[in-house]
Structures are given as structure tokens and as C-alpha cells.
Length: 205
Image 1 (spheres, rainbow, N blue to C red):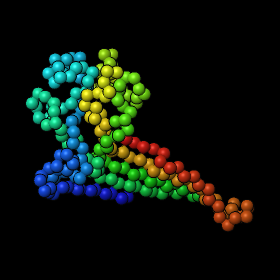
Image 2 (cartoon, rainbow, N blue to C red; image 1 turned 60 degrees about the vertical axis):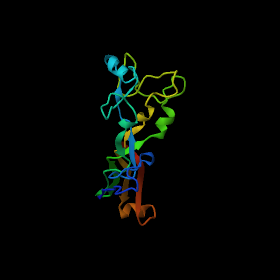
Image 3 (cartoon, rainbow, N blue to C red; image 1 turned 180 degrees about the vertical axis):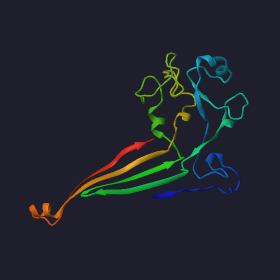
Image 4 (tube, one colour; image 1 turned 120 degrees about the vertical axis):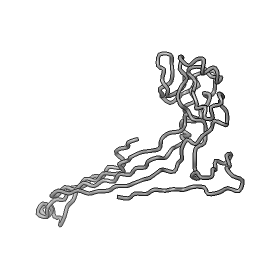
């Protein structure tokens, strides 16, 4: 088993935090700093949504500083591309002529920014789109806002592109069988082993 844990931190910057470059003292080199999506405005929240200039069916973001309005001051640290830790595990079992081996790799605590979702999740209502669980009056989900043909992209659309990057992946499984010497000699061989290898069969997100 291999276990790795990386801790990186920006110790200092010439002029303090550099928001435009995404560099912050005390944070990893790669961080995501933006508005945080906390759901979708529901019909029961019509008045509250209106106070923020929104309506039900639109993305609800966190009023981080609590001043009753949403602007750049409400950006916050959402996560980092740097995982908390990673590990790999390999093992091999054998019984008589049969042998099985596998390798598992996992990464925990990282975040990813999906450019794919930026490009194919506009919810414009007129173009091809990812099949997502979007809001309707009969499906009051908190996952994605309602498609709208009158806007190119939803308000606060970038908040839909951040995802937990934690995963466990079975990278390979090898299964083999070694025939005994007598069986191999019958077909003119000194030894014989048959095996099959399966690459990346399982992912757990």
C-alpha cells in the first residue's frame, strides 16, 4: 500500500493576496475562489429571491458576507485541486494454479472545475444540453435551474461547474491460471499459463 499526503501553502506574496491571479496567502497554489451555489430558488422563497434580484427557478448563491446582496464580495474558497491525500493498494492471491491480482487507486478531498459543463450545460432551451435534473414547478429540484431560451446562460452559471473530485478507481484486475507441468508437456510445452487482464473496470465517485 502507498499513501501520500501533500500540504502546500503560499507563505507570502509581494503585495498580499492576488485575487486576480487566484493566489492567496495561507492557501494552496491552486484554489477555486468564486460564488457558492447553495441550491435553486423555490416558489416558497419568492419574496426572499426578489430581495436579491432573483426569481424562483434561478440559481441561489450564498450571501457570504450577509449584506443582503450578491456581488464579488461574496466570493469564497470553494476548494482546491490539491487532494487531502491519495493512496494505492495492490494485492495478489493464489490458490493452487489460480492467481488473482488487482490495483486500486483513490484520491480524497480535491475539487475539480469542469470546462465540459461550462460548454455543454448552458440550459439555453434551444441547443443540445447535458441531461440534468433541472427545476420545474413539478420538479422543484435544487440541482440545476430551469432552461430559459431568453438567456444565453443562467445567472451565476459558473457555480454549476465545481464538483467533488474524490474517487476510488480499480485500475486493473489480472486473473490467471497456471497448468501443472504434466498438462503443459502434453502439448509440447515446459510451462503454460493463461491469463486475462481487465483495465479500469470500476470507478466509485
